[in-house]
Length: 397
Image (cartoon, helix red, strand yellow):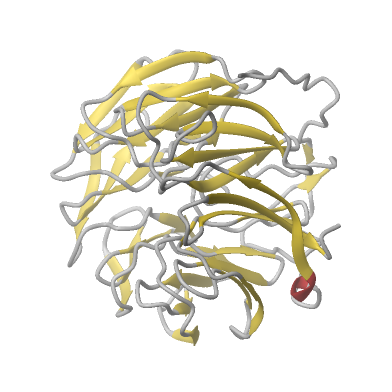
């Protein structure tokens, strides 16, 4: 069943100019005149920096007081939840696997209460590694039935659908009315965000399962053919490519003129030329690096989180024994949040020192985290294969 919600009373994100002073994530930010800050796509923005510069509620001194505010349960039988996005007080998350109306579907929930507003189901399951993205009045999501879906943000009604030739596990990236998405048919696609019409596609030599970063008119895409590609965002023409020592397991993250990507180790490439700037020998990582204030945060598949100097690759600190990482750190207001597939499932670390500030739950599988408006959202699968979507806030208030 689909439920309608009126967005007329919702507060829309407004921005005005802001003089640069203390910059939480690096670069420049704008002030926010709204009750709601949005987290509209995978790793916060099209650059996939994983840093929310507007978070002001949660901080190192109080994050240990995080407690469960609400929970939504999926259906038994292998269900779980993906990473989520938030826009104008509504949370969008993918429930995958299992059985029942809410699994294998995209759901819109009230971000404050967890109340379901609408759901949309696909013919085959979504994947646990993908995530939706928000555009102008539409929500975009790929699925293992090969389709990119565009849904009405208010009702969940299907507006358009585009079929690739392979399953889609790549979270879409939305920039300037274009949706960029990768497919296991080895192509990167640029689609008209309003109609789904193909603008261009680029053939790599392997599967494209990670999300694409889009910055300054360039699309950065990784492939299982071990290459990172820089493509002209308007035409799809190749600008440069760089061959790593393994598959591009993570999505690229772009900041300060560099492209950071996880593979057999962490690579930093010149964003304009593709030349290697530095590499750091972490164990193999699926974790998309997060960037804040000149520091790169990345998790490894062997349970460590590293803070690296983003300019030089020098190690600042590492935190071990935090479980197996498939997901990406996020940063907000001096705190690094990580999730793993082992205990502790969700953790908060001091961004400056790596000290463990908060941890919670022993689970079978977790999603990446979303930190916005004083809330932390995360999906996971427990050991009984029951999916949960959790919202944490200070003291559960």
